[in-house]
Length: 161
Image (cartoon, rainbow, N blue to C red; front, side, top):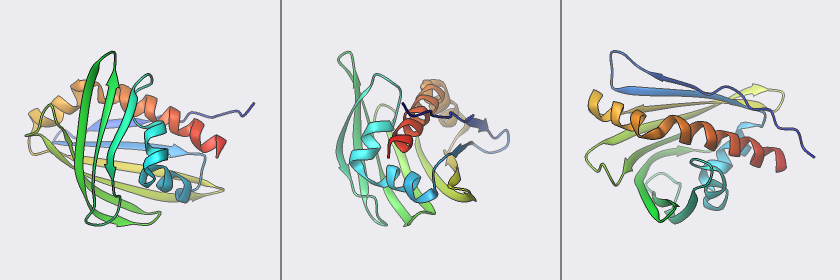
């Protein structure tokens, strides 16, 4: 059986700007973590809270591409969509993110992968929303649970790969 280390996920809401910063280290190289974000089959295996089924409608992770996926549990569905504005292999993904249940609150997200050496990396994600109310709505909607449980599933996926 493979032993998996779970690192702390830091989620910080900026007091001066409607921004959320998420920082997480992984015991895997940046290339593997990047691939888990851009490969729709892998992405569906780890994103979101445990117990959710993920259906990928589209996931064209390239500069100018777009995505839409649906999370489902107990007959409830939650859809998310956005556009990829810049994708640099193993380094950066800049995208928009919208929960279709709150279509006016679109976040601009920047995911940066940093090589830490020894086959490890750090992912820093910033999500900028146009208002503090919108940002706080994202945070209050259970984002923390989805992020933490999703990254735990990603740890397990990376350990198996």
